[in-house]
Amino acid sequence: MTTTLADTWGLHESQFWLRGKQPEKQVEFAAELGMWNVYGHPEIEAILRDPATFSSDTTRLVPEDLMPDSDYDPSSGSILQLDPPLHNKMRKLVSRAFTPKVVADLEPRIAAITRELLDAVPAGDRLELVESLAYPLPVIVIAELLGVPAGDRHLFKGWVDKMFESADQVSLVKKDEKQDQAIRSSLEGQKSLTEYLGVHVDERRKRPREDLLTKLVEAELDGERLSRGEVVSFANLLLLAGHITTTMLLGNVVLCLDTFRDWDERARADRALVPPVIEESLRYLTPFAAVARTTMREAEVGGVTVPADQMLLLWVAAANRDGRVFRAPGTFDPLRAENPHLAFGRGIHFCIGAPLARLEGRVALNILFDRYPVLRTIPGEPPKFQVNPNMTGVRELPLATV
Image 1 (cartoon, rainbow, N blue to C red):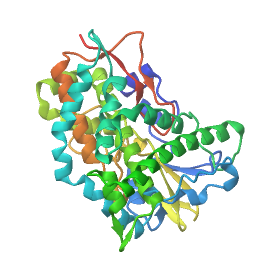
Image 2: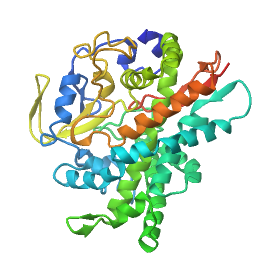
Image 3: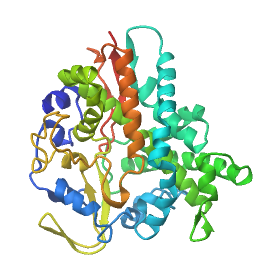
């Protein structure tokens, strides 16, 4: 079944797990990248739960000569690059905006946005899912929370596309024009988004509003207000992570149900199956395939000794197909007894927006089921996938609706 989906749509050749294959080694050094690849579920989970040994500050190991000339520092203030104790304090600030009650109260608005977006789809028997719903829905939700104009989402998309347009894995040991250009393009996208958010942060300092951006501007850490850079970095992360994962999640769920049509029929008939279908889609087609960590000291990973000051790529998408943890990992089975997937991470950096992404997925899928009797890929119009090897998701997904 795995090979049907992966081979039919031509997913990344490098992502062997999509073809039902298991890694020859759970931990291996990739000399051409200057990094270690980690594929196993127990190994990755242990790393994610041990920030003292495996730091999130990956920028410290990127050689300066690999970075193209730029006046933009992509690492400044990012909570994703922080370790305890500062990480814990910063996370507490933003977690107040994603309490269970805050997220639950968003359900009516998510449903209204979903219906408005689908109402705007031209009449006919087809739907381009990403353009019509999977991209704009989560962007509008997070933009409204932050207090930035949702109508600027075409700008966000252009900048974000620049960040993830490279089809090659970045190497720490080589410098060539192709990689240099890919990094430069990514930094241009990041810089544009950062400058955009900086304007809104400055405006909130002068004229506060009832929005999350104002709350970040007014928040205090150890008795001091956050710096402008810290507020911008928070907003940047929320806007990025607040839509990319959900965009890919929605596309991947629909693609899985098109491929495994018995589950499509079952979920339509029994809506209690929608949440486990979403969880299994997260495992089966994990949106962010890899995350990075660095070793603070020599450490043993899966029986292999990894020296200090090494970069590790943790392939959570491969871990979610680990046969030691998941029975029949290549089978799409929403009712599997246990599904401890790592799509949202583990430990201190567990995705703070996971409840919101799950809610958006559940609401949107139910409304899609209500509105369209079928959602099927169209012969001759294949989905277009993200080209970045660290991501698994569709950029375009044309569907027949009758």
